[in-house]
Image (spheres, rainbow, N blue to C red):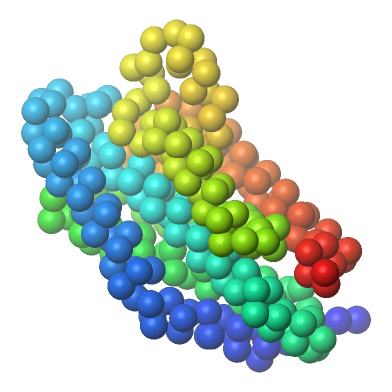
Length: 257
């Protein structure tokens, strides 16, 4: 029976978290400044011209969940993928594989640190948003739970991406060419109910739509899709990522070659 090695998990977790603080300008300050610019341009400038808001919610407040999700997705994937890619790039991964460290400890260390960074950023962004827009959180507990679930899911996805990538270019291709466009087209700045057909039906095929609306429901109690569907798809994605990582460690795919 394999016993969970908490000390190994904590060591990996601590090192990954310290790496983020050593590069705070890039990993923390940069995404916060970028999101702040969105609040200034869309929330304060454009939002002030929209007296009716969206679905009864002030436009500046309406985009808060979407901007929060935009940052969480990008940072979770980036932090987790870079965290596991560097040991592979330098060859340090072989020391990790030969050490008495199991899959669970590795995931808790790398993925846990990436998810923690995302949660820290989420908290900073929510505090920053109060200076620009007047928003509220109708269901704080569910909001935290949903943010935690999304951070963990996409940190796991980033971990898989970091193992798959064999160059720095591949680390950025998925976030830049797939995740970011899907997030912008997923209702970050608008309600998909305002789209004409066939674009409204096409938007429903975008998985990020369900994430944005699930998070928006926790803030304002309204959503373009059923909250149960949003939660179910998020849990399914989490399960698929866990299954993928289990297969990778079992077969050694791209880890031992």
